[in-house]
Length: 485
Image (cartoon, rainbow, N blue to C red; front, side, top):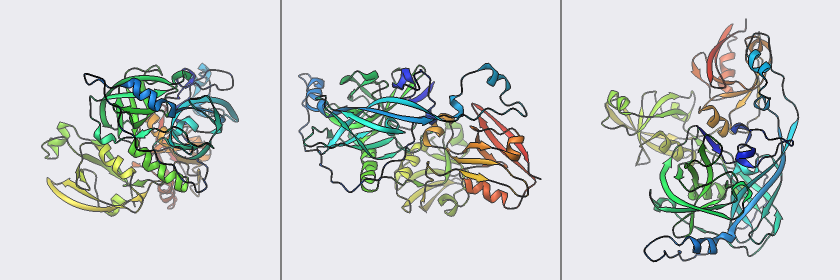
């Protein structure tokens, strides 16, 4: 099974690449650097009374569609994306020879044009619109189509690939707007309504219930998703999720699917998270996330008992990044974070979402379980590395490591099922001789998890004669010894 942003393939996302239907990996779908916006004002959503339920208590979805459907828009994009190793055809020749000593995959060059489609919704009567970051990734032209069929060229105010939120602006006035709700007041079992343009079918409404809240998805660090069974499909990306009173509580963003289509599991970004990101994108054109500097995992009953805990609540620290906020606060592998800022921690996602939405430099209070006793720790958070960090050339004198690497984007982490590592963009010298290839992910060096380029640079300062890289290639992991002598 795969978690997919709802724009993952032609059948799954309405992408047309160079005239042919080909699947796009998640790593290709999410990142785009937003334009720097000029200062602007935002017309707030006017206060609106909730939509009254039908006789008998059932939600009045017809009234919700009538009142707020005109604020839901279609978003179409045109652009071009650089080819990647993942775009190479599934040629048996490449599959047979890939990985053999001396064989190198050809480096794809150039770009492929694409056309994509998603949804969005108006939150400001002056033309401010929310959608998903992956909808407008790599877009050279963005067009917004209103409910009354008018079309406007849209400016991308800013995008945040980490939370998958984007803000658009069109030159229009007196637009219909949605009413914004509070996801914290919605509970599992409550009715929800989604409106969007699945597969290009405009203004489609589907209903369901909230299946779960605070869902932490594999590879996701920051967003406590709302899970629903409302039918959403490719093209619904960026559209609103309404509660039973007609207020928007989330942005439809991902589906869990083996086919690319809806299979009963959909995930929405809580609207409070999206608005937090929106405020910074409007003000600065970008957003900075904080980082604690740990790798966390959920507890099970066996782990909880081994650490002397009565229940499997908490986030277990499995590794600590050198020179990180966590390292300075003296957190250690084996610590269990049980509270953050006085709030109980049930899963690792509780910590990740709280830290990811904090500002760099902010202080958080942690209660940790260590040696069968509780300790309180205050941590000043670092800034998370930007997913758009420039690639770094890594040379290890007197030999050359010969790698060009960059941090993984949020979606690449999701696809690789990892929360750390560096993507190899080019390989030469000693690394290439050892079999490292573009597209590989460097997970560890000499047994230490790699979270930044600087960690590798520090390891090369002493001019070691040998290093061992833990490499992930597709779904396989292997240690690769590299001779630098």
